[in-house]
Image 1 (tube, rainbow, N blue to C red):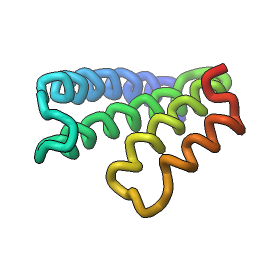
Image 2: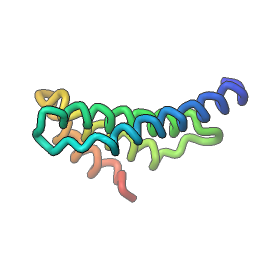
Image 3: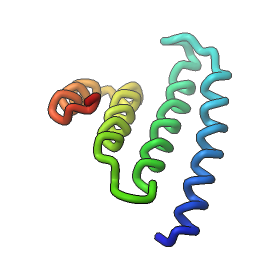
Image 4: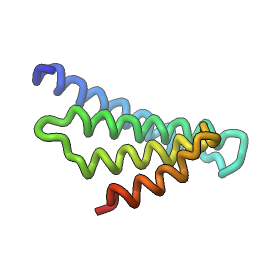
Length: 101
């Protein structure tokens, strides 16, 4: 990817992030309410945008940041596909990769 395309993508990702984050914060859904999954969809989108930003950031890939992004996606995605055991896997991933270090 050339630098101009990378810069454009990063700039656009921050604009998307701002929109998604505003929508997430404006959603006052309580856990287990009808709108809770919609709010979590926004959180999942936010985490996916952070993953994109980590992946396309200039320079070497920041592995610790990548691990944090993947962990966050796994935790939030568990609400949507609970039969896959993502919550358990995310805990295993956390322990094996020292995500928070």
